[in-house]
Length: 77
Length: 499
Image (cartoon, rainbow over all chains, first blue to last red; front, side):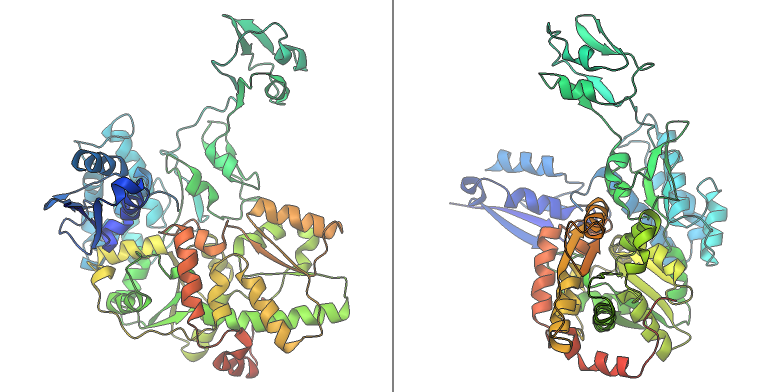
């Protein structure tokens, strides 16, 4: 089964703008969904200042909120 | 810090922009651009209109420059660039940001069933409750906010609402003023920062010295960083201590010291003080003195026991003193999770020049274009003991003194109590004083969890607490008294007590 790769930027700018809250979202997923996600930490996705940034399916998404990430995960998994 | 809310993001963006402009030298010219970049016409909009957002930002920029909040921001930027700081308290209410929350303390909710017993009306000593539109109604002109109606309602339909800032303050130091804006009573306030974390409008904040500090970093001066032991894990779980140290060098710091080394000095000095006091009067007790908000609370709210607070300086001041002894021209900068340290630094004249928080430092890094996660780490090993590094977590100071006392004064029987949160500290000290709890040594921490739970941290204390413990466990020695360089320094004599 193909896992959904979720890259969350943990660079300083994104860290300040809340990337750890996004990591928490993935960490707190129910086990049956979490096992279908591969969480990766990125150090920069090239959109500093518009963070927190993530990359899903090759697409960089800026100004990410925990609610939006939750939605993206349920749409893709 | 629990969650990075929108108000937190705005504050950090302002810091990062101010830092960026100061590093490139365009702050005085460009400061007003922040009003258009941090808040844009397109939104997002949190308040009534873009003009209100900008009025709040005005306050916020001035405060971040340590200038009076109603100043013209160009004048404020010039003053900050020249290194000036306004003589204002550390914690301030941003007048434009405060939403003047309603203060009707007791509210009848939809859960009211208009029952037959009407316990609320029966319990009210002021006959302030009537039934209006099939529901209990509290006449605000008569209500004295005693709360009996809330207690008496069988449905729990009457709730008590208080302002988040008021509820967060254990010392009753912030209240609604005449215009319903929050107002800080500085006679009671110890500037712990609890209201800053609590306000969902971001209306309480501390003044910042980042611009003044960056000017020093850009100059020829030798600027020394004193890193609080709570720094482990603050800048992202992937960022190693060696990367933080390397980044500090990149940003212009001349050298980096650990406050945990100062903590070793403090442990030994405080242990000696404690054993002397107990030898003199076995029934006496001593409290720690490293948390400035705790010390402030005792001074302002329990002056009768102020004599029991250790006279030993804090690890910050001990480390600053050590640096100054070596380099009298040094500019000393404490970097920590704490607002109250800004006050302590002002009171310890001439030992600490600036205090910046982890939040401010990370914003400075962003402003300088430094990404800590990508910095090449430098070699870094703590020169402090395990116990010195443990000062970052609640219980760490007590443990350190217990461990050192067990070696240097094994005959002394320590009876240790501790508390976290200013309200808890106050209550426990009252009980110790009244003889309800026995203790001869007390550790007081203003923040829940200790420094890792401070108001200016960047990561969850459940994570950083563990990281600090892991880092401390790697120290070369366990007890402070086994840290030979610290022992040697104390043997030279010197001044490790508050004046």
